[in-house]
Length: 160
Ligand SMILES: NC(=O)c1ccc[n+]([C@@H]2O[C@H](COP(=O)([O-])OP(=O)(O)OC[C@H]3O[C@@H](n4cnc5c(N)ncnc54)[C@H](O)[C@@H]3O)[C@@H](O)[C@H]2O)c1
Image (cartoon, rainbow, N blue to C red; front, side):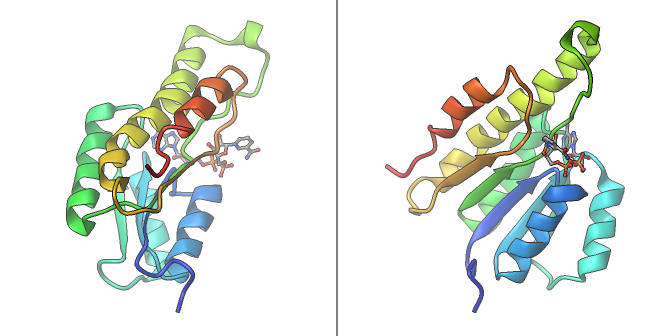
């Protein structure tokens, strides 16, 4: 028996780093895990490494800053499993440097991936989370201007 038997877990940015480790851990604890990442090659490499049971470890090549891609993947997951228990909003980009040196492209990338990404993923998951009791949505990326709105966002999907 694993701690997460029968749970459906989505981890974004699961192609490497913390997201990959979280996804593997949830899988080994019994969850059905859906890994989302921009980098499909990395997702394939993770699946190759884990050699999972069919149907309990699914990979989706998705840009979390593209709401249409997010909606498609999450609808597939929600329909397949009939529910979503846990969303880990881990995908993110880090810009190391001073704000005054940031280009428009840096700022737009940060906002679209680190702020809009979690909002799109949370919005798409909530309909599949309601009614099954266990709602959890977590946010990991860090960028000074984004924690306040995202903290507010994470208050939304509470169990009713
Ligand atoms: N490592 C650090 O020092 C640090 C510090 C603060 C915050 N963070 C944040 O914590 C999270 C995990 O850190 P990490 O070091 O494992 O990150 P990482 O850079 O190793 O992995 C991030 C993953 O997110 C994916 N990703 C990036 N943009 C994406 C997009 N638009 N759509 C889908 N996937 C996308 C990448 O392909 C990658 O697999 C990241 O969000 C990171 O920004 C990391």
